[in-house]
Structure formats: structure tokens, C-alpha cells
Image 1: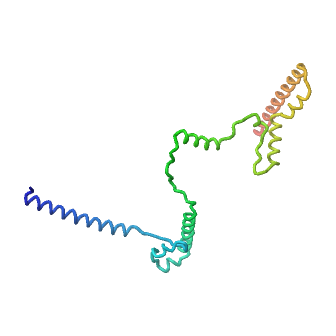
Image 2: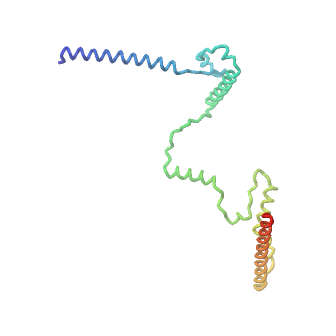
Length: 199
């Protein structure tokens, strides 16, 4: 049993709280209405939006900037509505699938490996992909690669049997020519560097 004083205090507090709540509600509502501007755009395919369009001043509504903006928004809305009717819109955050962690790992691994270059195999040194049906470019690249890998030279050398002594002398001669050409290139580069310095 509460005393009359406590009952009076409780009633006063309840009244003050209710009035304060109503004042804050009115204040928040008017603040939200003052600070929030709502715009709706209508399209011929969305007649239910025509009654919600806010009135505009004649000067602003007839300006070319506003007309272009409204036309762009109308096109966007018509695209969205037509896509929604045809069922082409997908949710931005679809519901997570019930795939196991192993399946998710496998899917991510396959999608990542699809972006990586192919691992070399027995045909990588003599294979060129044909891109967009351009056979001439692919053939020229293949010819260059075969020349760099000396495939034709080795094929020609393997047509007939070569004795061990002849092969040894040939390899020694090729090695000497290769080293001699390298030394000549180094000397030529040195002479060109001296000439560039003006000596």
C-alpha cells in the first residue's frame, strides 16, 4: 500500500514522462520531415507511381538538366520493372547455399585455376593457341618458337646416323663458335660504350 505522497509523485512522473515523450515524438517527426526529401519518378509502365510525384516549380521542372535527369531515371525504372517481370533480377545477397566446406573449397580452387596459365606438358614447346581464328599470327609465332628451340635442326640431324667421333667434333665446334660470337658481342658493346663517352 503506497502512501498518498508516493502516489502523487508517481502520477506526476508518469504525466511528465508521457508529455516529454509526446514532445520528443513531435520534434523528431518535424525534424525528419524538414530534413528528408522524398523523390519518386514515374514511367509509362508504372502508373501506380504517378499519384506520388511531388509538385515541382515550373522553372525547375522545365529546365533541361531536370528533364534529362528525369528521362534517365525513367529509363532506369523501366529497365528495372521489365527485368523484374521477366525474372532476370537476382538478389544482391543470395541465401547461402548448404554446400560443405570441401565443396566451397573445390569451387573456389577451380575458379582460381581457370585464371592461371596452363601447366607445361610434352606439347607446350611446339604448340600455339589460335586466337579468334587468326591462323597466320599463330603460325608465325609457332615458326619463331620452333626456330628458337632448334626443332628443325635437330630433326634434320637425326635423319641419318652420326658416329660418336663426328658428333663429338661437331659439338666442340659449335660450342667454340657460340663462345667466340659471345666474346665478339661483348667487345663490340665495349667499343660502342667508349664511342658514346666521346673518347
